[in-house]
Length: 113
Image (tube, rainbow, N blue to C red; front, side):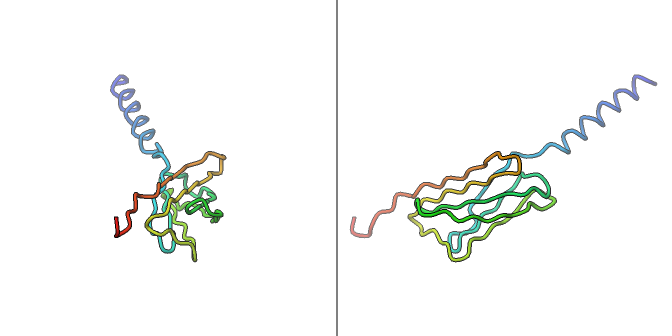
């Protein structure tokens, strides 16, 4: 009987560990006009500084707090990224760790080419 209880306890510990395992933080561009970024996999209620730079121009910063699910959305009013623009997003976590999203400028060809 003790052996069965020990096995059940091990299963419970493994389930709890996998349930609490955080996913790797990630960023994605939600909109180019205005620029909006979504983050997932962050810690619940974590403070995050999100910096966006478009085509090497001056960066804009938004400070957000992740929801209980570890997700957030940051919008940058008045900042847009035309289709042929490179976009760099860096989210700095409370720990100082950085999560990056780099979208290179797609090969844009003019209509005359």
